[in-house]
Amino acid sequence: MNTPLAHKQRLLRRVRRAVVKIGSSILSTSTGINRERLQSLAEELCTLHHDGIQLVVVSSGAVAAGMARLGMRERPKTVPQRQAAAAVGQIDLMALYEEYFASHGTQVAQILLTHDDLANRRRYLNARHTIETLFEAGVVPVANENDTVVTDELLNFGDNDNLSALIAGLVEADLLVLLSDVEGLYTRNPRVHPDAALVPLVEDIGRSGGYVTDGQGPLGTGGMASKIAAARKAALAGIPTVISDGLHGGVLPAVFDVRRAVGTLVLPKGDRLARRKHWIAYTLKPAGTVVVDQGACDAIVQRGRSLLPKGLKEVQGKFDSGDCVRCVDPSGREFARGLVNYSAAELERIKGLHSARIEAALGYKLTEEVIHRNDLVLTQPA
Image 1 (cartoon, one colour):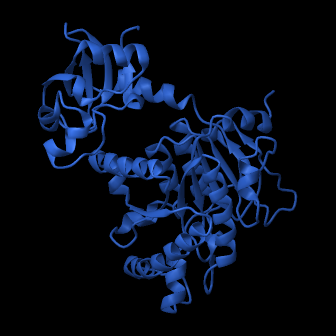
Image 2 (spheres, helix red, strand yellow; image 1 turned 120 degrees about the vertical axis):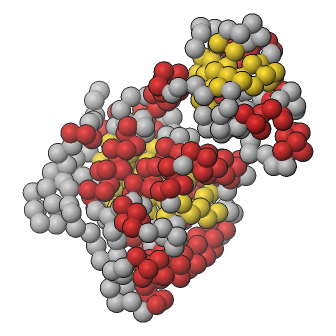
Image 3 (spheres, one colour; image 1 turned 60 degrees about the vertical axis):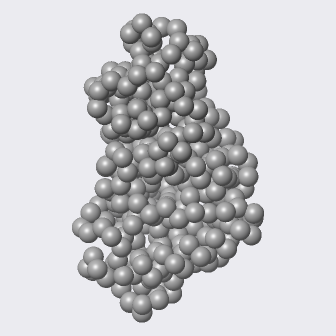
């Protein structure tokens, strides 16, 4: 079968981690935050969380909330005005998230990011490690663009649509959900053309003929064009996207129900893990080499384990956290490549140590693994 429902059933059976973006048009009114809608969405998100799905919520609404608090009658036209509104509104927005999630026994954390955070490899990894730690603690990160410290680039995210796609790639999500004020992509603008038809499935977002608008509501900066751009970015990372109407209750249970086809499903381009592994093994140029003992080599090759500092014998070359390195066994034979979590200088100080001693040796601990198994790819057959 090649139907939207068949594709959804295949993809959603593998969803363990998802990014859900909630747009300004859903949460914002001319008088501030739509508390009733946010409370309803919080309940749905908490249900998914308690069902075992790790979630990152990318939430708009801070600027609109700040506009109401500052008495602004129209959307700020200058960057400083928007930054001021965001600084005021973000407090209200997070307070409501904390209150509504706590009522369902769930804790939230605020994550503020800029484009530079995701373009800089070290800051990218720091953000990734922070979110992974929050996942381990059972906390739901609520992310937003850090409007108060960026300049013109804040206009390029598209009301957090592209930011949500970048975060989906950052955390290696299995699904991106974009909640909008329309049901999905249409063949024509449904607000103008009554005969407009919903596009339930997009197999190649690069050649999508779906409805695109250059406009947006008075409280948002995005539009369908920015959602298509975000879905395209996610697809290239091997992540499927669902674009659906977030104005009505029950949307998230419907999105995650394999028996129901709602909104528009945008298929990924290729398998996410296979694409990433290929990128690590064949695209990146190794910046150095790590020599591991035979036990660590066997654990990686035969049992799919991560590389820990205990198994590290020697560090060759100068490289930074996030660089690609060759992994060789005691005889010098390369058996794997991976993205390293510590610099060469840091590894020199922790090689041969148990993971529990990393913090004592460095004064801090980013992660227990030298290279996580998700960032390792074998270059020789097992």
